[in-house]
Length: 378
Ligand SMILES: [Cu+2]
Image 1 (cartoon, rainbow, N blue to C red):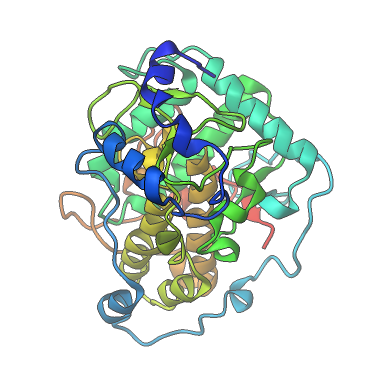
Image 2: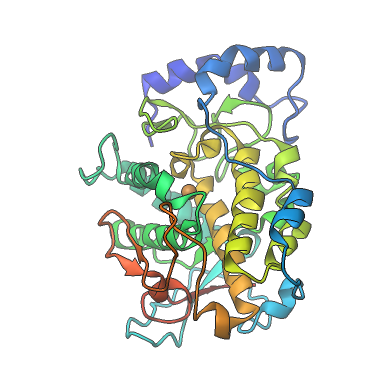
Protein backbone atom coordinates (compact mmCIF):
# COMPACT_ATOMS: atom_id res chain seq x y z
CA UNK A 1 0.00 0.00 0.00
CA UNK A 2 1.27 3.46 -0.79
CA UNK A 3 1.05 6.51 1.41
CA UNK A 4 2.71 8.89 -1.00
CA UNK A 5 3.10 12.59 -0.43
CA UNK A 6 1.22 13.16 -3.63
CA UNK A 7 -1.70 11.19 -2.33
CA UNK A 8 -1.65 13.21 0.86
CA UNK A 9 -1.52 16.43 -1.12
CA UNK A 10 -4.42 15.42 -3.33
CA UNK A 11 -6.38 14.19 -0.38
CA UNK A 12 -5.50 16.92 2.05
CA UNK A 13 -8.47 19.10 1.31
CA UNK A 14 -10.90 16.24 1.53
CA UNK A 15 -9.86 15.04 4.95
CA UNK A 16 -12.56 17.19 6.50
CA UNK A 17 -15.35 15.65 4.47
CA UNK A 18 -13.97 12.15 4.99
CA UNK A 19 -13.95 12.33 8.77
CA UNK A 20 -16.67 10.57 10.71
CA UNK A 21 -19.47 13.02 11.36
CA UNK A 22 -23.19 13.07 11.88
CA UNK A 23 -23.63 11.63 8.41
CA UNK A 24 -21.22 8.76 8.80
CA UNK A 25 -22.80 5.61 7.54
CA UNK A 26 -25.39 7.42 5.47
CA UNK A 27 -24.72 7.30 1.75
CA UNK A 28 -24.70 10.64 0.03
CA UNK A 29 -25.31 12.38 3.34
CA UNK A 30 -23.12 15.42 2.87
CA UNK A 31 -24.63 18.75 3.78
CA UNK A 32 -23.64 22.41 4.17
CA UNK A 33 -19.90 22.76 4.51
CA UNK A 34 -19.35 19.31 3.18
CA UNK A 35 -21.29 20.08 0.04
CA UNK A 36 -19.24 23.23 -0.49
CA UNK A 37 -16.04 21.31 0.06
CA UNK A 38 -17.18 18.72 -2.41
CA UNK A 39 -17.96 21.36 -4.99
CA UNK A 40 -14.54 22.88 -4.61
CA UNK A 41 -12.95 19.48 -4.99
CA UNK A 42 -14.94 18.49 -8.01
CA UNK A 43 -12.16 19.15 -10.53
CA UNK A 44 -9.77 16.99 -8.50
CA UNK A 45 -12.08 14.06 -8.05
CA UNK A 46 -14.16 14.21 -11.17
CA UNK A 47 -13.37 11.56 -13.71
CA UNK A 48 -13.88 13.60 -16.81
CA UNK A 49 -16.58 12.04 -18.90
CA UNK A 50 -16.55 8.99 -16.67
CA UNK A 51 -19.48 7.31 -15.02
CA UNK A 52 -21.16 4.12 -16.14
CA UNK A 53 -24.12 4.42 -18.47
CA UNK A 54 -27.36 3.67 -16.67
CA UNK A 55 -30.83 2.54 -17.58
CA UNK A 56 -33.59 2.89 -14.95
CA UNK A 57 -35.52 -0.27 -14.12
CA UNK A 58 -38.74 0.86 -15.81
CA UNK A 59 -36.85 1.49 -19.03
CA UNK A 60 -34.96 -1.78 -18.71
CA UNK A 61 -38.26 -3.62 -18.56
CA UNK A 62 -39.42 -1.77 -21.68
CA UNK A 63 -36.22 -2.20 -23.64
CA UNK A 64 -34.92 -5.59 -22.69
CA UNK A 65 -37.85 -7.63 -21.52
CA UNK A 66 -39.13 -8.03 -25.05
CA UNK A 67 -39.56 -11.76 -24.89
CA UNK A 68 -41.80 -14.01 -22.79
CA UNK A 69 -40.71 -13.99 -19.20
CA UNK A 70 -39.44 -17.02 -17.38
CA UNK A 71 -39.92 -17.58 -13.69
CA UNK A 72 -37.61 -15.05 -12.11
CA UNK A 73 -37.21 -16.49 -8.66
CA UNK A 74 -33.46 -17.12 -8.32
CA UNK A 75 -34.08 -19.84 -5.74
CA UNK A 76 -35.61 -22.02 -8.40
CA UNK A 77 -32.57 -21.56 -10.65
CA UNK A 78 -30.12 -23.13 -8.32
CA UNK A 79 -29.62 -26.61 -9.66
CA UNK A 80 -26.47 -27.48 -7.80
CA UNK A 81 -26.72 -25.46 -4.62
CA UNK A 82 -29.60 -26.81 -2.67
CA UNK A 83 -28.77 -25.12 0.57
CA UNK A 84 -26.80 -22.11 1.60
CA UNK A 85 -23.34 -23.10 2.76
CA UNK A 86 -21.71 -21.10 5.50
CA UNK A 87 -17.97 -20.77 5.57
CA UNK A 88 -16.51 -21.61 8.97
CA UNK A 89 -12.77 -21.43 8.43
CA UNK A 90 -10.10 -21.19 5.78
CA UNK A 91 -10.65 -24.54 4.10
CA UNK A 92 -9.94 -24.32 0.40
CA UNK A 93 -10.05 -27.27 -1.92
CA UNK A 94 -7.66 -27.31 -4.82
CA UNK A 95 -9.68 -27.65 -7.94
CA UNK A 96 -9.36 -30.57 -10.25
CA UNK A 97 -7.46 -29.55 -13.36
CA UNK A 98 -8.41 -32.44 -15.63
CA UNK A 99 -10.42 -31.09 -18.55
CA UNK A 100 -14.09 -31.81 -18.19
CA UNK A 101 -13.92 -32.84 -14.58
CA UNK A 102 -15.01 -30.60 -11.77
CA UNK A 103 -16.02 -32.95 -9.02
CA UNK A 104 -14.99 -30.72 -6.14
CA UNK A 105 -15.70 -27.11 -7.11
CA UNK A 106 -14.32 -24.17 -5.20
CA UNK A 107 -17.09 -22.31 -3.43
CA UNK A 108 -17.23 -18.52 -3.43
CA UNK A 109 -18.75 -17.43 -0.13
CA UNK A 110 -20.92 -14.39 0.34
CA UNK A 111 -19.16 -11.78 2.47
CA UNK A 112 -21.47 -12.29 5.48
CA UNK A 113 -20.77 -16.03 5.34
CA UNK A 114 -17.02 -15.53 5.02
CA UNK A 115 -15.07 -16.05 8.24
CA UNK A 116 -13.11 -13.29 9.94
CA UNK A 117 -9.92 -15.21 9.36
CA UNK A 118 -10.67 -15.52 5.64
CA UNK A 119 -11.55 -11.83 5.44
CA UNK A 120 -8.24 -10.91 7.04
CA UNK A 121 -6.32 -13.25 4.76
CA UNK A 122 -8.05 -11.63 1.77
CA UNK A 123 -7.11 -8.11 2.89
CA UNK A 124 -3.51 -9.26 3.39
CA UNK A 125 -3.44 -10.81 -0.07
CA UNK A 126 -4.79 -7.58 -1.65
CA UNK A 127 -2.03 -5.62 0.12
CA UNK A 128 0.53 -8.18 -0.98
CA UNK A 129 -0.44 -7.62 -4.61
CA UNK A 130 -0.23 -3.85 -4.12
CA UNK A 131 3.32 -4.30 -2.85
CA UNK A 132 4.41 -6.68 -5.58
CA UNK A 133 6.28 -5.03 -8.44
CA UNK A 134 4.47 -4.53 -11.71
CA UNK A 135 5.14 -7.15 -14.34
CA UNK A 136 6.48 -4.47 -16.66
CA UNK A 137 4.10 -5.46 -19.42
CA UNK A 138 1.51 -2.82 -18.52
CA UNK A 139 2.62 0.78 -19.05
CA UNK A 140 2.01 3.14 -16.13
CA UNK A 141 1.28 0.32 -13.71
CA UNK A 142 3.35 0.63 -10.53
CA UNK A 143 2.36 -2.71 -8.91
CA UNK A 144 1.01 -6.14 -9.69
CA UNK A 145 -2.32 -4.85 -8.34
CA UNK A 146 -2.30 -2.01 -10.86
CA UNK A 147 -1.48 -4.42 -13.70
CA UNK A 148 -5.15 -5.42 -13.47
CA UNK A 149 -6.38 -1.83 -13.56
CA UNK A 150 -4.15 -1.10 -16.56
CA UNK A 151 -5.23 -4.26 -18.39
CA UNK A 152 -8.86 -3.30 -17.78
CA UNK A 153 -8.18 0.27 -18.91
CA UNK A 154 -6.56 -0.93 -22.15
CA UNK A 155 -9.45 -3.25 -22.91
CA UNK A 156 -12.31 -1.02 -21.74
CA UNK A 157 -13.90 -0.22 -25.11
CA UNK A 158 -13.59 -3.85 -26.22
CA UNK A 159 -15.30 -5.37 -23.22
CA UNK A 160 -18.01 -2.89 -22.25
CA UNK A 161 -21.25 -1.91 -23.96
CA UNK A 162 -21.17 -5.10 -25.97
CA UNK A 163 -21.89 -8.71 -25.05
CA UNK A 164 -18.26 -9.63 -24.39
CA UNK A 165 -18.77 -7.84 -21.10
CA UNK A 166 -19.81 -10.88 -19.07
CA UNK A 167 -17.37 -13.53 -20.34
CA UNK A 168 -14.42 -11.13 -20.28
CA UNK A 169 -15.12 -10.03 -16.71
CA UNK A 170 -15.73 -13.64 -15.61
CA UNK A 171 -12.24 -14.58 -16.80
CA UNK A 172 -10.78 -11.32 -15.46
CA UNK A 173 -12.04 -12.04 -11.93
CA UNK A 174 -10.86 -15.66 -12.16
CA UNK A 175 -7.43 -14.54 -13.38
CA UNK A 176 -7.16 -12.10 -10.50
CA UNK A 177 -8.05 -14.93 -8.10
CA UNK A 178 -5.33 -17.17 -9.57
CA UNK A 179 -2.71 -14.43 -9.28
CA UNK A 180 -3.67 -13.84 -5.63
CA UNK A 181 -3.13 -17.56 -5.02
CA UNK A 182 0.02 -18.02 -7.09
CA UNK A 183 1.86 -14.82 -6.26
CA UNK A 184 0.58 -13.95 -2.78
CA UNK A 185 -0.05 -17.38 -1.31
CA UNK A 186 -3.76 -16.80 -0.83
CA UNK A 187 -5.12 -20.25 0.07
CA UNK A 188 -8.67 -19.59 1.25
CA UNK A 189 -12.03 -19.91 -0.41
CA UNK A 190 -12.92 -16.95 -2.64
CA UNK A 191 -15.78 -14.56 -1.91
CA UNK A 192 -18.62 -12.53 -3.37
CA UNK A 193 -20.84 -9.70 -2.15
CA UNK A 194 -24.63 -9.86 -2.27
CA UNK A 195 -25.55 -6.29 -3.22
CA UNK A 196 -29.27 -7.00 -3.16
CA UNK A 197 -29.02 -7.32 0.63
CA UNK A 198 -27.49 -3.86 0.81
CA UNK A 199 -29.27 -2.00 -1.96
CA UNK A 200 -29.56 1.65 -1.01
CA UNK A 201 -27.33 1.10 2.02
CA UNK A 202 -23.96 -0.26 0.90
CA UNK A 203 -22.28 1.84 3.60
CA UNK A 204 -24.03 -0.17 6.30
CA UNK A 205 -22.22 -3.38 5.31
CA UNK A 206 -19.19 -4.06 7.47
CA UNK A 207 -17.14 -4.53 4.31
CA UNK A 208 -17.06 -0.72 4.38
CA UNK A 209 -15.46 -0.43 7.82
CA UNK A 210 -12.00 -0.02 9.29
CA UNK A 211 -10.97 -3.69 9.45
CA UNK A 212 -11.67 -4.02 5.73
CA UNK A 213 -12.19 -1.54 2.89
CA UNK A 214 -12.80 1.58 5.00
CA UNK A 215 -15.92 3.70 5.03
CA UNK A 216 -18.06 4.58 2.03
CA UNK A 217 -20.45 7.34 3.09
CA UNK A 218 -19.88 10.98 3.88
CA UNK A 219 -19.78 12.47 0.42
CA UNK A 220 -16.94 12.63 -2.05
CA UNK A 221 -13.72 11.87 -0.22
CA UNK A 222 -10.34 10.21 -0.42
CA UNK A 223 -10.38 7.01 1.61
CA UNK A 224 -8.68 7.75 4.91
CA UNK A 225 -9.66 4.73 7.00
CA UNK A 226 -9.55 0.99 6.61
CA UNK A 227 -6.89 -1.22 5.11
CA UNK A 228 -6.39 0.92 2.00
CA UNK A 229 -6.35 4.38 3.57
CA UNK A 230 -4.10 6.75 1.66
CA UNK A 231 -3.83 4.49 -1.38
CA UNK A 232 -2.60 6.24 -4.53
CA UNK A 233 -4.07 5.13 -7.83
CA UNK A 234 -1.70 5.57 -10.77
CA UNK A 235 -4.02 4.23 -13.48
CA UNK A 236 -6.73 6.59 -14.73
CA UNK A 237 -8.69 8.73 -14.28
CA UNK A 238 -10.33 7.56 -17.45
CA UNK A 239 -7.97 6.63 -20.25
CA UNK A 240 -5.15 8.84 -18.97
CA UNK A 241 -2.75 8.10 -16.12
CA UNK A 242 -2.30 10.71 -13.41
CA UNK A 243 -1.72 9.74 -9.75
CA UNK A 244 -4.83 10.39 -7.66
CA UNK A 245 -6.27 9.18 -4.39
CA UNK A 246 -8.56 6.19 -3.91
CA UNK A 247 -11.82 8.12 -3.61
CA UNK A 248 -15.47 7.21 -2.95
CA UNK A 249 -18.77 9.06 -2.80
CA UNK A 250 -21.53 6.77 -1.59
CA UNK A 251 -24.63 7.53 -3.66
CA UNK A 252 -27.51 5.68 -2.03
CA UNK A 253 -29.96 6.48 -4.82
CA UNK A 254 -27.73 4.56 -7.24
CA UNK A 255 -27.02 1.57 -5.01
CA UNK A 256 -30.79 1.33 -4.42
CA UNK A 257 -30.95 0.07 -8.02
CA UNK A 258 -28.81 -2.95 -7.10
CA UNK A 259 -32.05 -4.46 -5.91
CA UNK A 260 -33.65 -7.88 -6.03
CA UNK A 261 -36.38 -6.36 -8.22
CA UNK A 262 -33.89 -5.09 -10.79
CA UNK A 263 -31.80 -8.29 -10.72
CA UNK A 264 -34.92 -10.41 -11.16
CA UNK A 265 -36.08 -8.25 -14.01
CA UNK A 266 -32.79 -8.89 -15.81
CA UNK A 267 -32.89 -12.61 -15.00
CA UNK A 268 -36.30 -12.85 -16.63
CA UNK A 269 -34.87 -12.16 -20.08
CA UNK A 270 -34.71 -15.27 -22.24
CA UNK A 271 -32.04 -13.99 -24.64
CA UNK A 272 -28.44 -13.66 -23.44
CA UNK A 273 -28.01 -10.25 -25.10
CA UNK A 274 -31.06 -8.87 -23.31
CA UNK A 275 -29.92 -10.21 -19.96
CA UNK A 276 -26.43 -8.81 -20.58
CA UNK A 277 -27.62 -5.31 -21.50
CA UNK A 278 -30.06 -5.21 -18.62
CA UNK A 279 -27.42 -6.19 -16.10
CA UNK A 280 -24.56 -4.11 -17.49
CA UNK A 281 -26.57 -0.88 -17.64
CA UNK A 282 -28.61 -1.82 -14.59
CA UNK A 283 -27.25 -3.25 -11.34
CA UNK A 284 -23.68 -3.30 -12.67
CA UNK A 285 -23.62 0.37 -13.65
CA UNK A 286 -25.51 1.51 -10.59
CA UNK A 287 -23.15 -0.39 -8.27
CA UNK A 288 -20.14 1.33 -9.84
CA UNK A 289 -21.67 4.80 -9.74
CA UNK A 290 -23.21 4.20 -6.33
CA UNK A 291 -19.82 3.66 -4.72
CA UNK A 292 -18.51 6.51 -6.85
CA UNK A 293 -15.02 8.00 -7.05
CA UNK A 294 -12.53 5.53 -8.51
CA UNK A 295 -15.25 2.88 -8.67
CA UNK A 296 -17.18 5.14 -11.05
CA UNK A 297 -14.23 5.25 -13.43
CA UNK A 298 -15.21 2.91 -16.26
CA UNK A 299 -11.54 2.48 -17.22
CA UNK A 300 -9.61 2.24 -13.97
CA UNK A 301 -12.14 0.97 -11.43
CA UNK A 302 -10.25 -2.30 -10.73
CA UNK A 303 -7.81 -0.13 -8.75
CA UNK A 304 -10.59 0.08 -6.10
CA UNK A 305 -10.63 -3.10 -3.96
CA UNK A 306 -14.44 -3.08 -3.97
CA UNK A 307 -14.35 -3.74 -7.73
CA UNK A 308 -13.76 -7.43 -7.01
CA UNK A 309 -16.70 -7.59 -4.60
CA UNK A 310 -18.92 -6.00 -7.24
CA UNK A 311 -17.80 -8.15 -10.14
CA UNK A 312 -18.23 -11.43 -8.29
CA UNK A 313 -21.82 -10.25 -7.75
CA UNK A 314 -22.12 -9.59 -11.49
CA UNK A 315 -20.57 -12.95 -12.37
CA UNK A 316 -22.89 -14.78 -10.01
CA UNK A 317 -25.90 -13.13 -11.66
CA UNK A 318 -24.80 -14.50 -15.04
CA UNK A 319 -24.42 -17.93 -13.50
CA UNK A 320 -27.90 -17.73 -11.95
CA UNK A 321 -29.27 -16.74 -15.37
CA UNK A 322 -27.46 -19.69 -17.00
CA UNK A 323 -28.81 -22.10 -14.41
CA UNK A 324 -32.39 -21.32 -15.41
CA UNK A 325 -31.84 -23.29 -18.63
CA UNK A 326 -28.40 -24.89 -18.52
CA UNK A 327 -28.89 -27.14 -21.53
CA UNK A 328 -29.38 -24.15 -23.84
CA UNK A 329 -27.50 -21.43 -22.03
CA UNK A 330 -24.25 -23.41 -21.76
CA UNK A 331 -24.56 -24.49 -25.39
CA UNK A 332 -24.85 -21.14 -27.15
CA UNK A 333 -24.33 -17.40 -26.85
CA UNK A 334 -25.66 -14.44 -28.82
CA UNK A 335 -25.03 -10.73 -29.11
CA UNK A 336 -22.01 -9.06 -30.70
CA UNK A 337 -18.52 -7.81 -29.97
CA UNK A 338 -17.34 -4.20 -30.30
CA UNK A 339 -17.15 -4.52 -34.08
CA UNK A 340 -20.63 -5.91 -34.40
CA UNK A 341 -19.42 -9.44 -35.10
CA UNK A 342 -21.65 -12.11 -33.59
CA UNK A 343 -20.30 -13.77 -30.45
CA UNK A 344 -19.93 -17.53 -30.69
CA UNK A 345 -18.62 -20.17 -28.33
CA UNK A 346 -15.33 -19.87 -30.23
CA UNK A 347 -14.94 -16.15 -29.56
CA UNK A 348 -11.60 -15.60 -27.82
CA UNK A 349 -11.28 -13.95 -24.41
CA UNK A 350 -7.88 -12.35 -23.89
CA UNK A 351 -6.19 -11.41 -20.57
CA UNK A 352 -3.25 -9.55 -22.03
CA UNK A 353 -1.06 -12.57 -21.41
CA UNK A 354 -1.57 -12.78 -17.61
CA UNK A 355 -3.28 -16.11 -18.27
CA UNK A 356 -3.73 -17.99 -21.56
CA UNK A 357 -6.44 -16.91 -23.98
CA UNK A 358 -9.61 -18.96 -23.69
CA UNK A 359 -12.74 -19.31 -25.77
CA UNK A 360 -16.18 -18.49 -24.42
CA UNK A 361 -16.90 -22.22 -24.66
CA UNK A 362 -14.23 -22.86 -22.03
CA UNK A 363 -15.68 -20.47 -19.47
CA UNK A 364 -19.40 -20.36 -20.16
CA UNK A 365 -20.00 -22.99 -17.48
CA UNK A 366 -18.11 -22.32 -14.25
CA UNK A 367 -18.41 -26.02 -13.40
CA UNK A 368 -17.12 -27.43 -16.68
CA UNK A 369 -13.69 -28.17 -15.23
CA UNK A 370 -12.08 -27.16 -18.48
CA UNK A 371 -10.61 -24.00 -17.03
CA UNK A 372 -13.10 -23.05 -14.34
CA UNK A 373 -14.36 -25.09 -11.43
CA UNK A 374 -16.26 -22.92 -8.99
CA UNK A 375 -19.73 -22.04 -7.83
CA UNK A 376 -21.32 -19.65 -5.38
CA UNK A 377 -22.54 -20.60 -1.90
CA UNK A 378 -26.04 -19.48 -2.91
CU1 LIG B 1 -15.21 -3.51 -16.53
